[in-house]
Length: 140
Image 1 (cartoon, rainbow, N blue to C red):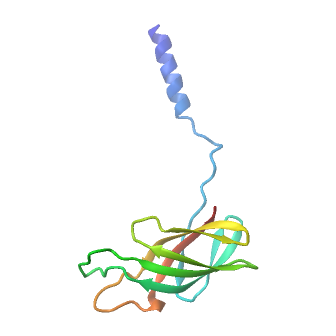
Image 2: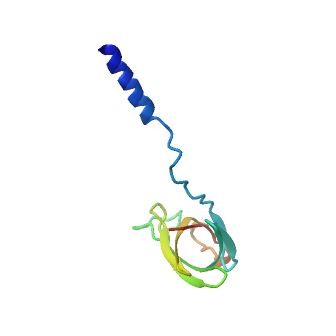
């Protein structure tokens, strides 16, 4: 009886550790670095989208200051494919999920911003040309 129970437990453990080959592949989200008013191509599953950073309104707390709140950076992107264009607004808040769903030519996409550099520092403010935004897009 002990051998039967032990064999059953080993079988259950082996089955539960079995690799699932039919799992859906995860999209390859390699962020692209954008500069102000310089377009970049972002590859999504099966298509390329042209993304341009149009506006940055950065109210994040400077790294060398004490602030009541962390603030945010409000970003505006112009995103287009071969025949459609849309403006996408996103509010970047450091540690939270920085995603925005948008529709372009009948297809839904998710724009993700993982980094906004440079971080503000007193006494100067970054120029728009200095910003580098890490962006990735995937089909929803």
